[in-house]
Image (cartoon, rainbow, N blue to C red; front, side, top):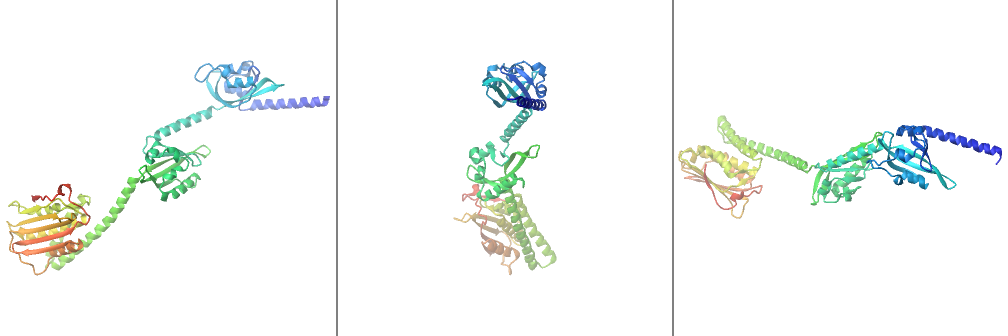
Length: 481
């Protein structure tokens, strides 16, 4: 090699050294040069800032003894166990090794180390160690781990089904409540496996809604049915929220599925009640219209019309009140007749007698029978047994033999003035025949015997109720009102 080539090579070495010096001076990571024994021969400014030593203080000191002398728990760290020392002794590179080093003041620092041995003629003459401060990242990881631990602890105690997914929508966590409800190990529902327990009719819209949410196109707030471990489906409301980093990127998705079956059932009951109320109001208005029309045809004066209509509507309202107080669950035969007849059971006591088992009527039958009880009572007070001090009324009822859903009722008057069959039918008779007979598909028979009116009624219990447990037998009960 001539002098010119030697000069050129020397110039290149000088330039490379100059570049290396600039890089080392301005690098953000700590850079150390060590000899074959691990003694520090160079430390850049970043190393001084990171560990609190000056370069002059570090020169000729063993790097392990200066920066890596203890474990994080305070136990001495033998040099023989140190991965960095092993690296430069063996002449093998070390990349991305995470560890804990110590500053001059003894405080720990989380680092990531990479060591590159310098080999000349097959002999390790030194190494270059770069150290990155990862304290901020470790703190963030610990905070995230702590946050996730709190989340999981909370997720295991709240009643909702709780789940979380990766940013791409892959489900990788389901709380114990999910497994408890579905009866399936959560691992089988990771990914999109959770869709297996969604009702087939809800599966496609649920999957599409989830895809839109993951894409950022729409919120996730959906109702679907989930299959329980018993095989039945219950309604749930699912909602999700995305956790984002400082750049606005999704790092985690959290969601809950809340059982709303009771709410759905309440909504359905409310819907049915609204329809039932509409039906009842229409029927009630039709009944009032019939009362007004029939009374108008029978009344001989405005005053008579007013009093009769008022009495009949009050009776209807009384039955309605009885039903409302029972949440429209019906009323018993005894309740209806006691409400009408109790006021007339004065001395001699026992002039009104109710006899029969406890039979609960549907609301529709109760309204009709309540009006009939009012008309029979009114006629008895004006013209029949209750118009005299010693007249008596007996009401007895039973369930037709072999037909638990068919009511047989008798109204028997005695001790009143002689009875004569009327020349024309009054409202009470018409009501008995039309409402109890035609509307309820029953049968009515009226006997105007001289000793007292006798009425037989046979009517089906439309809603299918049967006697309550204490009346299931054929035993009859006799009660004075």
